[in-house]
Image (cartoon, rainbow, N blue to C red; front, top):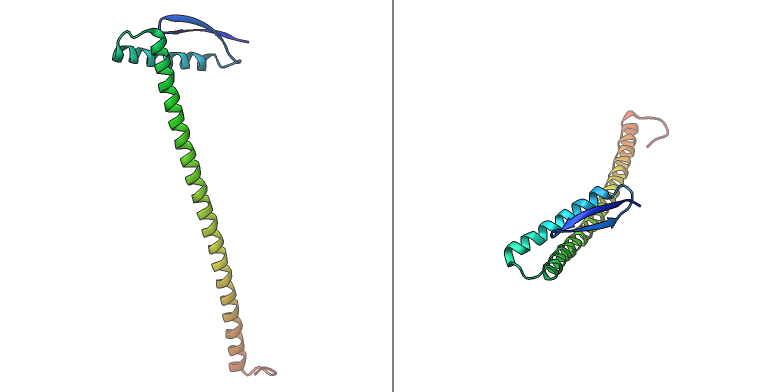
Length: 123
């Protein structure tokens, strides 16, 4: 299993990760390090543990909000798919009624044409 050394808040941590996940883990660590640095600048030296917890809670909050947005979008997509399916079914039904109407109109035209032409046995 690959191992990566990352630096967060000036401290190095050796982490194991899945094959091919090294770069991703390094990017995550850089993101957390940047978040902690932002908080340190905003709040001053309030203790590493507190900064780490605040950064983790902030990221967790962002993740929760993202999940809520995804759920909302998934519900909206599902509703739009249902509406589209309903519209497609209504369109198919209308096309079917139209085709039946055209068929009946064609039969009437043929009947009228036969009458006008005086075809034997029709009438």
